[in-house]
Image (cartoon, rainbow, N blue to C red):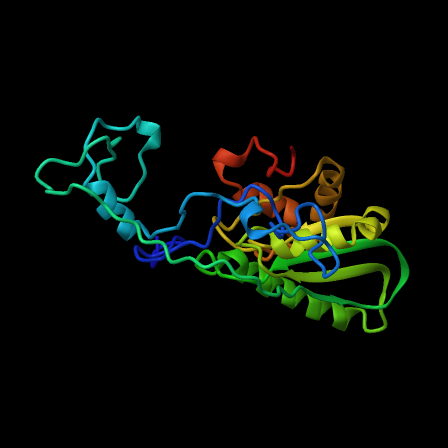
Length: 265
């Protein structure tokens, strides 16, 4: 936990949602553009109960006044309070009721995706690299490090290929990811035909830097061998004449050695 780790401080609140449908809830499965029919506010597929994220500091206060039996061990968290199931208030607290005041207001707003590309000889197959740019939901990790990495990569790309690339490469910064993966979903719904015919691969950089100093990669089966082969030709940032594959193997945490993050898996 902050300041000794990547977690939020006690009074930090995570940006989150419990929407069951990605994208604009007023235009489910369709792009949110002017001429598309929009659901009325009373029919939106959003939770019908008040929901709000809270800090661990507030959660500790609320859990501290609950009574009842202890929860199963796997339900217990790590905020330094006894976890009880509730059903009645803790003895001696003098509490009869808690009131939740909700002041949330539904409003429509414009979200903005930002895209950058270079001229390409072949635009029939596209390599897509993306990261959302809205809200820092963790201490710098998501999307802070990812966005910084993508900006650095796009700058290096432009300097390395000033006249353009052979295959089309698109860098995308997505808006409104935390409220429900809205920016990227709306893009895919609007340009689904183009993506289905041209998209070769997509690399997500939301949390590019975080954790143990090793490398963690999750990929579709079609790209796993590509990653293994690329790891042989890219230099590891530490050590002389060490490639990514060897550095990856030497630093991977023990608990991940049999998972898809292993370069030999």
